[in-house]
Image 1 (cartoon, one colour):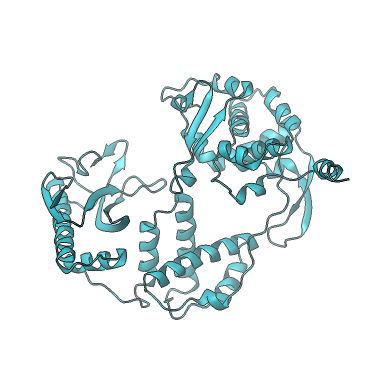
Image 2: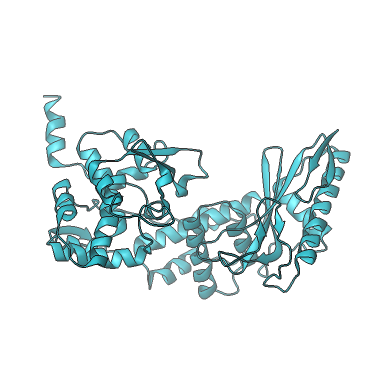
Length: 424
């Protein structure tokens, strides 16, 4: 007979079906004042996520959650008006109900699916388990976003899809989905790539719904939509990058933005990762990190030997919290970096694809400058220097054999000519 010690310090018998219970506040980008508290039940290499119905604060001024104990700290009042004692009592009740379910599963010699465990727990807690109809289509979608374990960026995309669906048809259910009409609705406001992105995200939810038997219909079986298309990636040459790095910029704000952009181009990480780096990420001149976007796809540690220019930028900042760079929001950096490009004379004309018309147009490269371009400079610069994708990916944080990495570089005419000479 095995036993499990829950976060409240008492034993639950599980016999031969071992499981573990954990409570935690769900981290959502920018939300700290009214955060959902989630239950995670791990068993037989499966994990069930369940929203407890309770919320707490996790902001720096009033962090109510005790991460070690797995419950609310003492002498707290939650956003819903619950005291710590009442809040933690409710979590104990849920833990007991989970234990009763696993005792029953053991007696029946059955192993529940994740969906069955979730449904059985709802019934145990006296909550109605609805069938998949128009009343719970959006609640099912919301639940999927919360419990999916997807990256923050992917969750944001799904939340935008939900918002668009509600605006398109507030009465939508699994049986009245009109994909051609929804696509036409999106076409009024969005680019083709955005439409494809939203439809792809919607498709993942419907595939999940089929899997857990919320529906038996997949309207995407008879609906075809265009894949996202990408023109040639646009980025600075190494010479242009160095021009930017060496430029004398008097305005402190503009100089700071230049430093942020250049350091990202020397490291190749995503902007969100760049903003969280501290001096603790650096050891013996090598910056190491697990890319936030790929943290659920295996423990792949990106390692970047820092160049002299990168080290030079880092030495310009000595922040009290140990961060490598001052915190600047993505949209703010995107706004200012265009001004920096213009100021230092980086205005080379480039051909790009209009997102609405999909026709080619020519614009100054300064108008396209963004934090993402810095990442392309790193990947494209290395590729054009003859470095293979696996080596680049080991530093840029792309997962192994990533297809997306090809979006970050352009094969030059010189490389094609050199390749042909090999088979002359």
